[in-house]
Length: 398
Image (cartoon, rainbow, N blue to C red; front, side, top):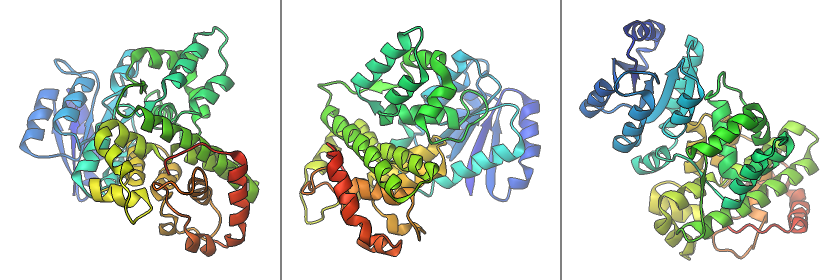
């Protein structure tokens, strides 16, 4: 049974939550605290899977409480439920909060959000990977990408197309804008897996505030232990995004499927960026190890009790991104675990991931021929291979 702690300094609101969620008492153990200090005391007494807090509270506001929870109870899922949605409140919550729900929040939206968050705990069985992912404040971006975005936003007539192109070419920035739009940091959640579209919904003014806040985006700079690895993953992600989009376009005229393949390809290795950021030395050693197993996932599983696909999917789900992109990230090395019977965006990303870059790279995983046969596309492998070769991708990590 999931344990959920609600925190608000207004007794009437806590009473309203008790009534609203009374029917869920058979599925959740719920507790209620009237202040940040009381919430921390409850957490010391017993663990909670999820904490949902108001933002504006005396003595300790919601963002300060969530920062302390991140430090002391790192595996706890952290959510905001607040009517305080002004610029200052949102910017303070961007780092420590996984999701942001705005008041008034109807019972179905709240139940759906909490149910989805509760189910996340099952995605990663071991505690350490959950803690690592839960502590991520921002996925690293390349400094050139952030510099380009800052330059574009400084222009008085900066355009959505150029802003979208920059954000849609960097996994770290893309996943951040998708989190902010999908989980409702700026009002009602908008379900989208399209980074340029999400950037357009935020608008240039909000993006300028986010760039200036130093909370939303983080650059990996030359000299840091994980600099080269991050650059490799970003370059590979760009290559897979382009290849997956082309493969999808060669198999389907469905614009939604093609877009899903493009953005699924961009975000498929977010878990590798997390590992490079959080445990750079350990992950570098895993990447350099040569064993009889070709796929990097087996070595990651042995070292971390999870692979980069599972950790990336957990982060995307934790940040409220759509299930479609979470599914692609989780299964891009194991598409046979899906229920696919036909070509999907997952097929395109899996094929692009395996067919780009150096085929002799010991970190790559091989194409799942049984899965490709199952969906009736074995005769298309040669065409996909030639398509990826023509695109001349530069990616390294699979």
